[in-house]
Length: 279
Length: 327
Image (tube, rainbow over all chains, first blue to last red):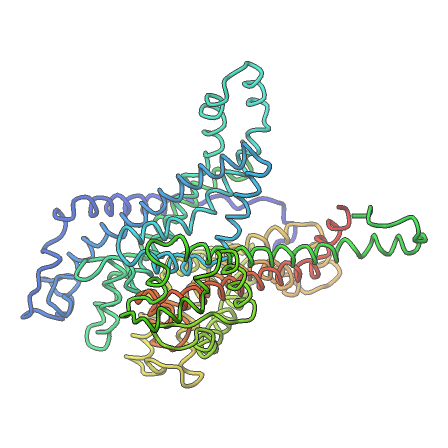
C-alpha cells in the first residue's frame, strides 16, 4: 500500500521485451519476404501418406489432414496475414490523415461534415462494418483490405484532426504565416509533419488490431480462399480436426498471438514517447 | 444555458433552473445526437444499396435464381416505380416500425428471422460482458500500484489482448471439451454450453479494459482525496473498487461494440445458433436485406449503449456534473 504515494511512475524496466519483439518482427519480415529460405517444404504440396502426423523431427509442427507441412504453411502464411493487415492500415492512414488534415485546417462546415461521417462509421462495430462492405464486394484479398481499412479510418482521422487543430494554433505556424509563406508550403512543411508525428505509433498499434481482424475475417471465409496458407483460414480448417490432431488448430494461433504481442510492445513503447507532450 | 431563464421567474426559480437544467439539457442533447447518428446510419445503408454496382433488384435477390414473381415483389416492396425521395421515406418508415423487409434467399421476413436469433446472441454478449467487466475490475483493483502484481497482470493482459478471441475459443475447446470433457463441444442447450464461448469472447476485451482501468485507478489513488479517505478509515478495497468501477462504466459502450463483433466469430467457433451465424451466411450468400438489418441493429445497440453510458457517468461522477453547471 503506498502510504505516501508521490505522483511518480515506476521506472521503466529494461526494454528486453522490446528487443525480443524487434528480433521476432525482423524474423517475421524475413519469413514474409523470403518464405522459401526458411520453409522446409512446399506449403501446398499434399502428401496423403503423411496426413495428420503429430509434430516430429521430420515435420516440426506436424502435418495437416492433407499431409501438408504445417511449419511451411505457417511461414508462408505470414505473407498473407502481414500483407493484408499492413495494406489495410496503410489505406486507413492515408485516407485518415487526409480527412483529418482537411477537417482541422478548413474547419467550419467541412469539419462538421467529416466529423459526423466518422461518427456514423464508428457507430457500426468494426468487424460488422467490414462484413457489410464484403457483402457488397464479395470475399477476397483486395476486398478484405478495403473493408478492414475503411473500418479503421476514423481512429486516424480523429487523431490527425485534433493535432492539426493544436499545430495550426501554435506559435511557429503563426510566425511562418506572417512571413507570407504560401499555404501549400505552410501545410506541407510546418503543419503536416507535426500533426502526423504520432501516426506511426498509432499505426503500429492499429496493425495489431488489423492482424487479429484479418485472421478473424479469413476464419469466417471472407478473405483468401483454400488452399491458400493464411493463418485465419488454417485455423478454420484446423478447428474441425481438434479431436484427432490438436496441432492443426494451435500453431497458426500461436503465430498470430506472438506477432500481435510483438507489434503491440513496439507500438506502446513508441506511443509512450509522446505522452504529456504537445506539438 | 442560463440564458434560457426569463426575467419573469423569481430568484429561487432561477437558482433552481441553473442548477438542474444544464444537466437535463446535456442528457437531452446526448439523446438527440444519438438519434441523429442512428438516422444517419439508416440513411447510409439506403445510400449503400443505391450506390452498389449493378441493378438494385438483382442485388436484393442475392445469389438466387430470380423469377419474374420475385422481381415484381421486390419492385412493390421497395416502391421502385416511385421517385427516390418517396422510396427513402418509406424505407425510413419501415425501419422505424421494425420492418426490415424480406429475405428472398431464405424466403422469410428479415425482422422475424433476426428476432428468432436474437436471444442466443444476447445471452452470449451479456455473459461475455460480465466476464470482461469482472476480470478487468478485479485485475485492476488487485494490482494497481503493486509492483509484482501489476507486472504479472500486465504480462497476462498483453497476452490475452493479443490473442484472437476465436483462437482462444479453439484452445479452450480442445482443453476443456475434447480432452477433459467438462463442457459440451457445440450448441446452446444449457448454461454449461455458455461458459467457454463467454470466456473466450470476454477475456480479450477484459484484458484491454483492465489496462485502461489500472491507469485510471492509479491516477485516482495518487490524488490527495484517496489519502484522505484512507485516513478516515475507509477500507482500501472500497476506494479501489469504486474508482476502478467509474472508468469501467465509460468503457462499456466501446466494449459492447467489440463484443458484438467478436460474437459473430465466437458463435462460428462453437457452432452456436445466433445472429453471427445468419450474418456470416448472409454475407457469403449476398443476402443484402439480412446484412443491412444486422448492421442497423448493431448500430442501434451501440448507440443506445453509449448514450446510456454517457448519461450514467454524468449521474455517477459528480465532477462531470459540476463541469456541466459551469458551462
